[in-house]
Figure 1 (tube, rainbow, N blue to C red):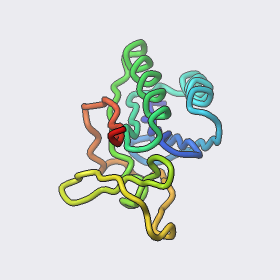
Figure 2: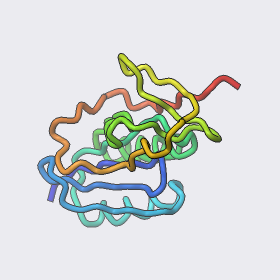
Figure 3: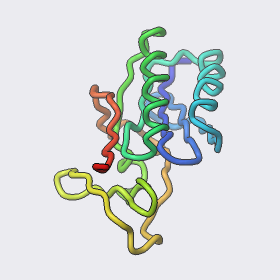
Figure 4: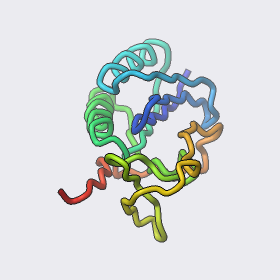
Length: 152
């Protein structure tokens, strides 16, 4: 069965969605480290499915999770000849602020300009969710990580 896989690894838990004809058919959720979880999950997925597309959230979020995800998924894409595309994390959490460093959060402003600031109301934070249908999501061919690290 040919499927597409969506990977949201910029926060915990890591979410993996399995899609057939752009409709969610299964979800995998894991609290582990990205470096441990992704190889294990993809080993299972590659044994069970014919993966035709991989989509991942390339930021903003956990710097290390983005870096590990990109390296692992890009390597898998090249070695297995599976197209890899990316999208912003804001598409999967109702445009809610995303944890950055310490008490700071990433905000998606006008014209998709990402800023970093303190959050005043933690109640405005939304959890990441895998959409039931990915046909309307504009995934990008530009798969490089989108770190948005603040100046040190």
